[in-house]
Length: 137
Image (cartoon, rainbow, N blue to C red):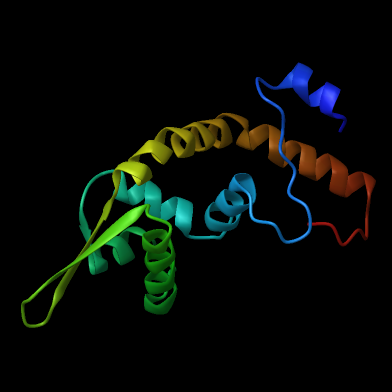
């Protein structure tokens, strides 16, 4: 994509990362491109959640994977973790201001996926029928 083309189609130039240089979009896609982070953000948008509440809200996530997911979100400044000195310790997670600023984008993705899910499934089916034996899935 040429710089001139991107200037026409976007309000500001697209910054492409080169080699292993960190850039904003790559960081965001790395964090939110995994299986659980977006779902955790969606759940935490509803307010403070204890670890077990969060785990129950995300069926299929293991304790280890949830721990890794919330720790990564915490590391990126999207979630805060509060440990209450009880026996056993109670741990609560909450979106930070930065995390809350992301929720409208996540909501827009969820709305888009809901609105276009049937069309995507139909397109996949047509493509699969036209390309039998393809390993693309």
